[in-house]
Image (cartoon, rainbow, N blue to C red; front, side):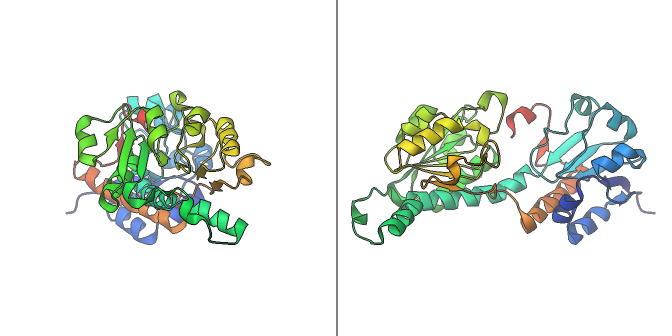
Length: 337
């Protein structure tokens, strides 16, 4: 006689469910878990929490309900939440930790997309692609390009700010792909890891002064708001580039804009802003030395299916009594975006 399956539930926004939990992912989850009700949303659970009564597992993503005392009272058997998206801050509560509910997230899978996107931007920035493209469009000639500074892919210097999931992957990709020198600022980086990654640990001010390209990967926390200032950007070398795929609030945006207006030789590649999108009329829309993209570095469209697949792997680890690769705890949560 087979072992009885534990019970589970999909709980997230309808559009997110369609993007994350593909047919193969649902099949593999449901081979191990009995799904006890149709897709639930925060609204449906608020109206009728009874589907939570017997579930051990919740499979979620963008649009998770807040896991407060009332939610937990309605889900007395809840063991783990498999959250196939990034930040979990909006739904996690102290009550959840105190009840011993475990949590894993798709932030690691999201990093699989952000890191190669960042590498591509670093390569293009070391070649000053955006600057040369703008100049060619403006001047209509190839003349004088030889006189322009060009860090290149051999002697260029790249700076990484924070080596979390994304920053670590970018550092490893740089090590595997290019011959550039890599500097890193991260208060939590150990000398052993720095040596393994072949990165030089430096202070934040020094990183901006020495690097041809600086890539930001710092989470948005109360203590990191406005961490990157206009003075940092103003200290950058001629023709340098700044990349932000982290969070806009980590940068003092008005100061950044002022520097970019004064330093047309600098280039900012901004996939995130604060607010997001920028306010109507923001100079970020029109500055020629800004490449503004709509938060596309992470998983989008069919890429989101990868985060669902990661939840299948995490579920298998949990059921086998193994450590979940992307588990978030009360202690590690403050270090995440």
